[in-house]
Figure 1 (spheres, rainbow, N blue to C red):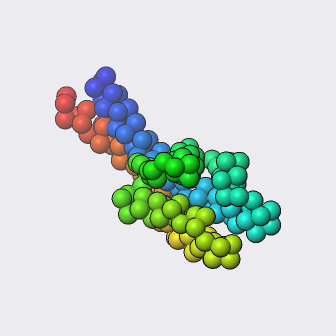
Figure 2: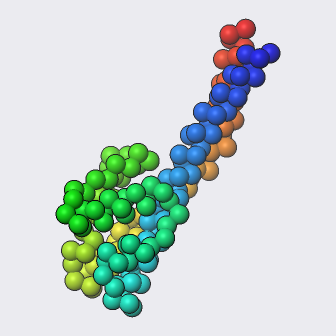
Figure 3: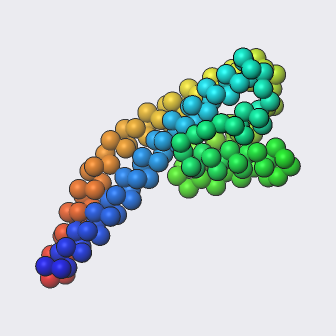
Length: 154
């Protein structure tokens, strides 16, 4: 019986891990969209410097906070590293492109670039939301596979 319990619990934990990663991706893209809106407001209305906006911005995604910190280090003369493990290589390249284009244009062009990026992030968010809707399935499947493994071990 202990084998069944541990197998089910292990499978459930694996399912929870997959579901958590899916939810973190969704939160990352929501935070990116909020970031674009905050940058737009800061540039348009307050005429703040980009570094000041990014230094004071509050985002819920810890992965995006790391990316912002990497970008601020890049502005200070470092290298632009986007090592976010939540994203695919293609998505990382898109995010790196977004950050590398920040601050490289006049105000009007920058606002247009932010709108384009926000549209891209919204489409990525839709995809991430559809995938995260399956998160309860991951937990159930993990539990079932754990239970099956426990039965096979008996």
